[in-house]
Image (cartoon, rainbow, N blue to C red):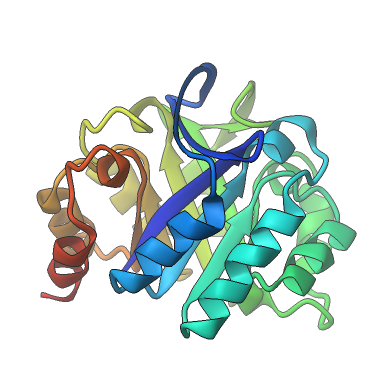
Length: 244
C-alpha cells in the first residue's frame, strides 16, 4: 500500500484546511518544492499535490509550482498525483505536461458525468493516468472545492467506474479531513466493495493504526496531511506500517 504525503497549495504556501473550510487554514511552509524534497528523502514514492486555489476558482493557479515538484520527484524516482481545478481536457494535459503521473478529476466528473465518461473512452488520455476524486460528507458528494453539496452518493459513482482501468479513486471524508480523528473505515470499505479501481483513503488519518486499518480494509493508498505536519505520524514509520 502506498502512503502519499499531501502538499496542499494556497497562495503559494503549503497549508491544511479543517473539514475543507477555507476560513480554517493553517500555513506550514512557504516553499512547496522543498517540502516535496523532504518527503521524498524520507522514502515517499508518491506525493499528493492539490492546487486549493484552483479547486475553488476552477482556474489552474500553481502549475509552475506543481511542475517544480514533479521535476524534483522525477529526479528521485518518485511520482506525483495532482488535482484541483481540473475542469476540462486541456487542464488534464497541462498537468500531465507539468509532470503529474496521475491527474485527479473531482467536480467536473461529478457535475458533468457524460464528459467524464467520454474521457474514459478517449485513447489519447490513458485511464491509468487519471483518478476520480470523490469528496463526501456523510456519503454525499460535494464539488467546487467542497463548497457545493450534490445529490449524489460516492458509492454509486465508484460503482460506475468498475472495469474502467482508472488509476485510482481518491475518497475523502470531508468531515474528518484535517481533524486527526481517524479515517472513515466503514465508508471507505463500502467504496472498495463497490469497484475494482484502486482506492486511496483521505481524510482523518492521525496515527499509525489508521495506516494499518487502511491496509486491512483493502486500500491501495492512504493520504497523510496534517498528521505529518503536526508530527503525529513519522513518515518513515508510516511507510513501514504500510508494508507490514
